[in-house]
Length: 244
Image (cartoon, rainbow, N blue to C red; front, side, top):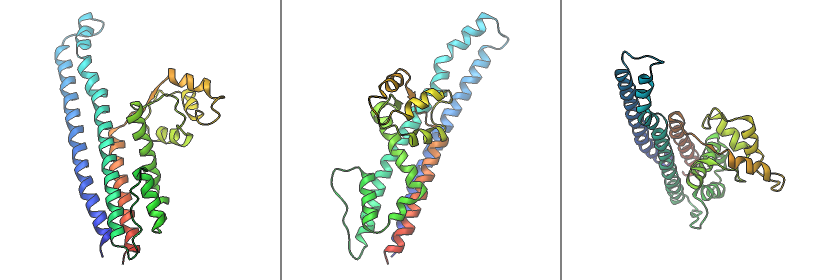
């Protein structure tokens, strides 16, 4: 029974659609940025600082330049991330149900109100596939869940919520998806916002004054696809050991 082959193959095929979409969207953004830069150069031809007209013309291009250099890419990357997360939740549920269907003694998929991630964790433990939960991709995916919650519930900003663990902040900094200007002081505020609520009231208050936004990048979005692909490769491999 080629259960693992089916899980791996369908995941690869569907994730390739996301790869193509991301590439085309990035190409469209890059092309528009190139057009804007060419327009600025054309309009300012023959002008140089400190000529006031030079600055007036450049400022007239600022709305377009800012839209396509930062605002629109951020919208694109957040939307892409959330779409990929939705795909992951749907696919992991489908994969677990598919595995269960081919077991000699099915365990059943939990239809309760837990998150898909928690249901999957419980299911893999039930059917003796806990190795999956020790793979580095599972660690990544758990952080994706935290990023998803931050985007959906707080527009991608930290504002001193109590669930911002040090491990999560370290992850964001390591992945370069928080602003480079993030100061050590602000990082400390985030890291110490968990536990000892009374002692941390001041830190939380400061954090609210200094919101820090997660800035998703094209590189990170590309990494997401590879993580999901690797993860379902592991799920497929492990399920082949179980389903004869």
